[in-house]
Image (cartoon, rainbow over all chains, first blue to last red; front, side):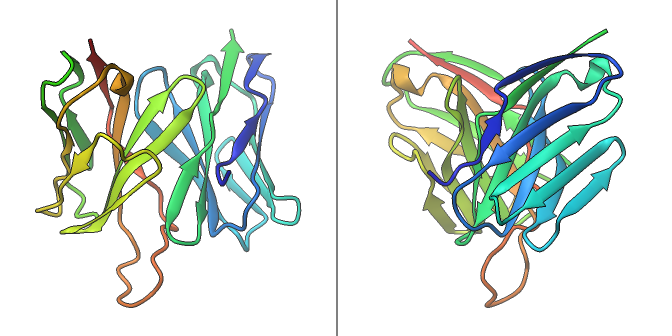
Length: 110
Length: 121
């Protein structure tokens, strides 16, 4: 399968804690993207990291990419209740295909 | 406001009754795509289009048709819906590279619509 696989499937933390989600894949990629989805709504793009990049930051979000291990992680620091959502990684492979994993359901408890 | 607009938001229909889900984007994006989302299966691509009159199959195209006559619109057509097409559908668009002759690569994010929840009885 070319899709990314997120780990864990579900994560429950307290407000203020950090949340880390991982994505693994099996093929070579052009880039890897992280998206967020609130229940029943459309996905919203968070960060895109290209295959020649190792780390990117956006506000409280930090994404790392290790192409030798074919894995990426998304770190949300100082989480808030409003961060409760599903988080998806998507990998872009050659041939312009973008495939999504099944997501990690994050619950941040107040 | 830059957006991808899908209609309808909810749709209940019966087996075999043709339907169309519309998708429109106002960002002049070249690339558009349809996904379906099912529990335990994530998002799976149905069809995509790299530009006007250019469409191609995704991972699960059976039972669906699309057309791209104009850059802004990318309707999804179910000629004869069946219960296994009950799902949450998303349309998405992306700028594309705009580089003539270069291998197509996103390197730019997808913008998603708010989804269409379809139930086929």
